[in-house]
Image (cartoon, rainbow, N blue to C red):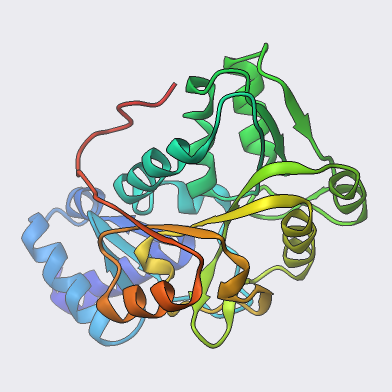
Length: 265
């Protein structure tokens, strides 16, 4: 298979799945991982993908919303590092709201380590997993209409959230940009996220470095809405400066690659 054919196949896989992994592509194309990495560099230069550790993610339009399964394997080590820092912000006996998203999902898997925590979430996948593994954990699932990313949104979700008041909200976002703020491709999810923000005493945004300069179609909130933002050490210097100047506190999580889920409960 010549280079142009390989890259067309990679682009096809990326379009169908939203993300690709180097090791999987090497097996699929029967080439070395180094060859795949070179192909990804060429495709990144053409603007169709963004390289991440171990693979690449698609550069989508602002209205495109990848599904939960498409996003769960992207930047897994970064998400684990962010979750490890975020769980330190949860006090025993506190009430915690968690929005939909794969980074917040990583945090949720650590929450049972905190004594007597109560969890409120509009994430269907998160709620199902927590209840299955920790049935005694106090859990409130908002209800609502599921989005492609597994978040429950709409009037039912908003009314449930409005009746609650939590100590801290952990908010996942599709993108963060100094002009656009925190964004998502889904209009209804943006509204429900704003309801979550109003219902929380403190707002903590969780976003890995690939979210920087990504803009979804709908604004959730400006950077100033975040009391704390936790990201990973892959964030660029421009991002560090901008976020430091606009969010209440910026926490940079050091990433250790290859942990493969160590620490999850």
